[in-house]
Length: 69
Image (cartoon, rainbow, N blue to C red):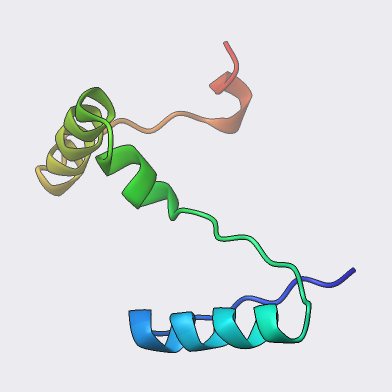
């Protein structure tokens, strides 16, 4: 089995999906991680808050030795 990543606009993706179906190739569509997070109100709030904190330089550095403490 091989993995093929295809990017395109909605019409292009629909055309590729139709072709794959016509030749009997199975495929699945995966949701982008950001789209997934934005689809849930509590996750969306956390993500947007984190983005704002990063833009405002409200971050902290954690050393690799301390990351799992």
